[in-house]
Amino acid sequence: MTGSTRFSPARRSLVAAACVASAAVLAMPGTASAGGNGVLEVAAYEAVTIDEEHVIGLLPEGRQNYVISHPDGFDEAVEQARQLVGDDIRRNSISAGVESVDGETTLVYGAWRLDEKPSEIVIVPEGVTDWGFAAQPVTLEDEPGWGAYYASAETFGGDLPERFTVVAYDENHEVFDEIEITPWP
Image 1 (cartoon, rainbow, N blue to C red):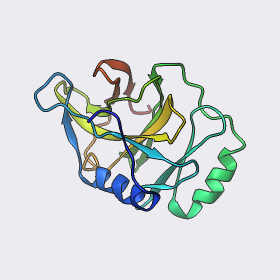
Image 2: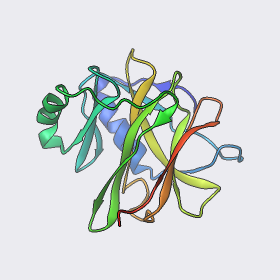
Image 3: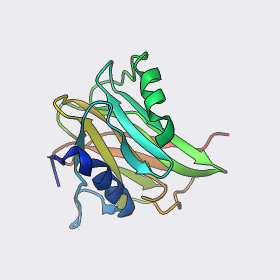
């Protein structure tokens, strides 16, 4: 699915959680079952549920400014982030971050910057060439050109290898950026 999906504010967290809970595994573009999970449009400062431990929110201040926090600390995280400029990633690129617990990846996240919305962002395990786990892209309503994305352990079944690549596709299903993630020494 290309483009964005609009939902009422009351349904956004439920939809975001459903996208994660579906444990989406996508074939890479160019294969018969290729497809995207859409870009979720949200209001500024809106807490979108990722999983029980994480919410994400996008801020209109600065460049690619977003927060990921525990649901109980979201308001405080937003206030702290309002003092920051945010990421300043170059056009047609992504950033990436990883949260790990006891050596296992529990969350992959980052920002994207592209004139149009990405068709999909995929987490590809090392050694795999024909499929990946779908990340959920998020963007601010009425502020095109950037957003964030996330994929939790629920998305990839808690079974993500130490090395993987985050691959982002534009509306034409062409790779516009990718970042290889390797473990810290």
